[in-house]
Length: 65
Image 1 (tube, one colour):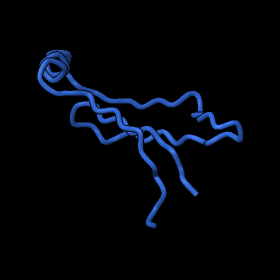
Image 2 (spheres, helix red, strand yellow; image 1 turned 90 degrees about the vertical axis):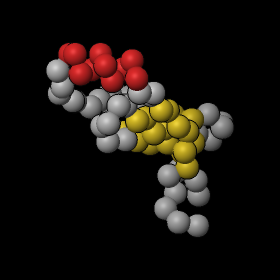
Image 3 (cartoon, one colour; image 1 turned 60 degrees about the vertical axis):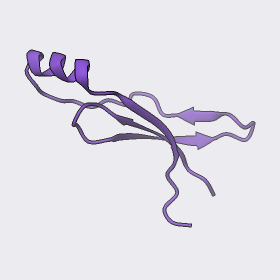
């Protein structure tokens, strides 16, 4: 069975994975209220946002095959 998920990579912080659920009608449902915290100086944040991309990937998080 497949386990859909969205992986988000922001700057140099660890990848955040949000797991979804495939509904019987074929839609994907993702849980609500996901959050993460990070701490950095505002100038470092500005420099990082100007030079590093934000990665968002739709993945199958099934372990092994």
